[in-house]
Length: 249
Image: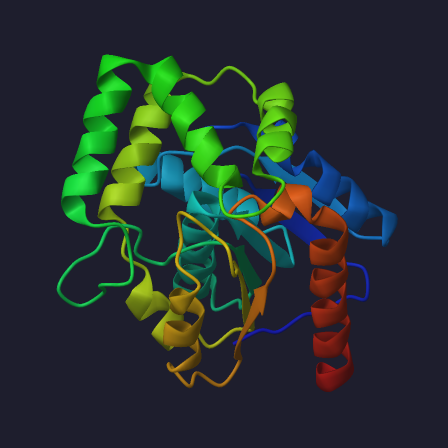
């Protein structure tokens, strides 16, 4: 396996479902101010093998793959495929991301199936209203919910409905638990204590995997912490990358 760490890393940053890339621009800029090269991309349909392979080949050019929520699941898939195809271990970082978003018998710390199906049906009936409701859930859980929601609304971009539909299918079907249990590269997973969409208990679940290079951390804030807490999140990412550099020489 190949491990390559530069002091200033090439980072691929993947946004979450429903909002577009502007939501992670503050985090992107904060990481760039620390000397990293950061490319920011939107979600993609990882269930389409051709699209997934295109993204795998694109992601191979980066040292670090970071994703928020659904983006974290996509980042995990990319890191795993790169490892399988090229024997290269990318640094994997996820932000408020559940490896399995919809609960099943093996992974119960997730959204229950009926609630997710109701959300999908709501999206098909009225996409705009559903996106607004989802945006509020992203901000929910902290005293700043209303102000954060206004900030979120000001940054959200119009999204392609097919991309959003594919994203919902990814959230429903992706189960990356076994990937995280078996990934031999460095991985760092950040969760928010007041997250309304991804339970803070997921952090404990991952910690219990006892994988050699797996680290987790629980921070304050809502599901939207990569946007609303971008300064502290960027600092944590940079500290983690520096630590890896020091430990790997």
